[in-house]
Length: 269
Image 1 (cartoon, rainbow, N blue to C red):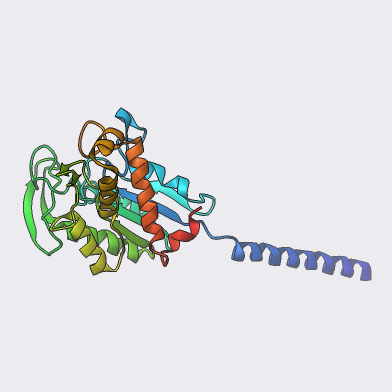
Image 2 (image 1 turned 180 degrees about the vertical axis):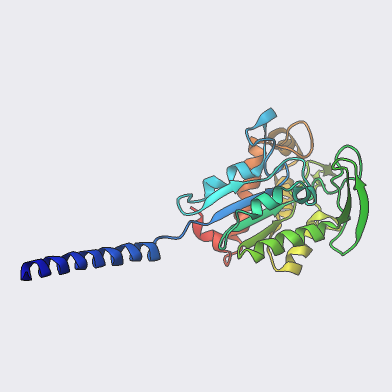
């Protein structure tokens, strides 16, 4: 009888130890690694991100700078979108549904915001500036009435949505176009333009800001018009070849490094 008692207690002890070990594993298992999301237009991901026509976005070259065993990098940008249509097409909702506390979201919009609000080709424009102006239009693409806001309004929504998820927003000013004046880059957009409005929105919402436009335009001035045109751009003044996309990615990373308090830095190689 005593032997049975000892055996039963030994079995209970083993079960108890097993339960403690299992509960400890569940309680202290490593948290899911954070994700670094990229959203924007074709200068972030051109086409399907497979180099169609020899054109690439800078988002294709970001992951190589990170230790992806510790942080995931996901490029959800889509060519042709503006700060407005990335939201109205439902693309932002799909990204936002995946965002969790501790994640990072970097955004670059503006190249397609300078269009008409209600044309039959795109209907992707936004009202200039960062104010509260709005205009109701009939959207001939979506075939609905729509209230269109300013560029800053849409950018604020991204930032506020990201913060509400406990994630960290980063705004980039749009990369410069391949335009020149008197031998200097004329693609700067820091005065009454999307670069200025991106910066102002970042300050207004206390989001991190990378002045990508200035960094790249300064580099273009150093390298010169002939080199930039022949090496970095394709058939138009906006979309970059592989070398141009790699250059832009390098400056995105440089911009991240210039913000030492940005937690994303600890995942860089």
